[in-house]
Image 1 (spheres, helix red, strand yellow):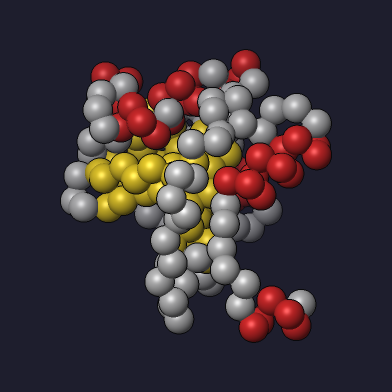
Image 2 (image 1 turned 90 degrees about the horizontal axis):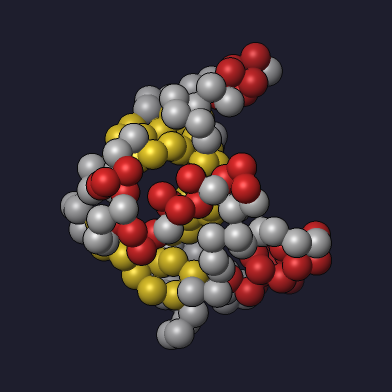
Length: 152
């Protein structure tokens, strides 16, 4: 697995993007997510992108199957301690890997896109000490070691 993008739950319209623009990061096209009730502003890099994400339709974001992503809960509670960050992975180019059984569940969005969603992280994932945050993120993501890893 490799990084596809990182998202940050933001205020509506992502005014937080202005800080990125001020330091010279160029903005790509925005996007809406039918069936998920969210919209975003995106900043593309060579092999990944940063997505500033917000809820535009709370009814849609709270309906099945979008509710299983917990985005609505995390967005609504982002100032009260809910984790505003998310990491989206894709299969690496040279191998196709799947999440270990029991560690994730898959949500299929309209258009046959699927997401592996960690069962171990709740709405408040990322809260607590730095060591607790590291344990949460490391235990939520699993990948096979590759020969490239031994050279780092």
